[in-house]
Image 1 (cartoon, helix red, strand yellow):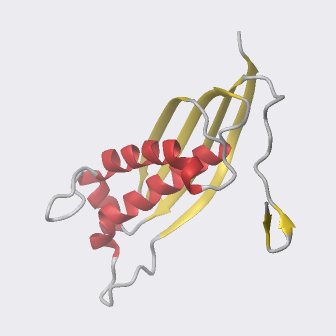
Image 2 (cartoon, rainbow, N blue to C red; image 1 turned 135 degrees about the horizontal axis):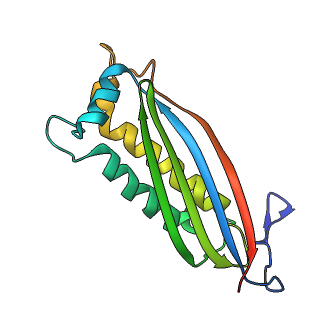
Image 3 (cartoon, one colour; image 1 turned 90 degrees about the horizontal axis):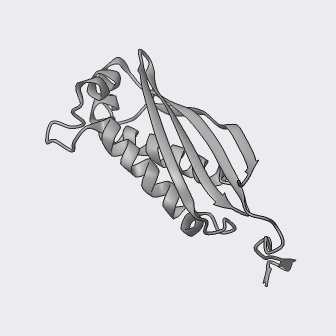
Length: 156
């Protein structure tokens, strides 16, 4: 298949052996004091959308499972575990997503996708507290998104 005159294909992993694959991604959602207080209170909106942290965790897990539908060259893989950790700090929220799989290809993109969707969901849950007088977000931002660990182990 070609795209714009260039060859395009999904990497063939047929010959690779199945291994245990683990990847962890982390990032930070910078919030105002009001946004942090909204996260800490467990109330995302005056009309009651639910607990921001719990909704963001569910969104992160769902995003991990949907990664091959969102990132064109990611292989559908058997996810065997997802852990989402959230730490509320005085200037925002740190999140990490750890993904485990048994397969022929890594899970870094799955961990990153889960992380970013989790952070965006958290932002959405407290955006009412983040907007300035003009409805803008001058202080809110997602920072330091990265893969912090990648592990490949032999299956026993």
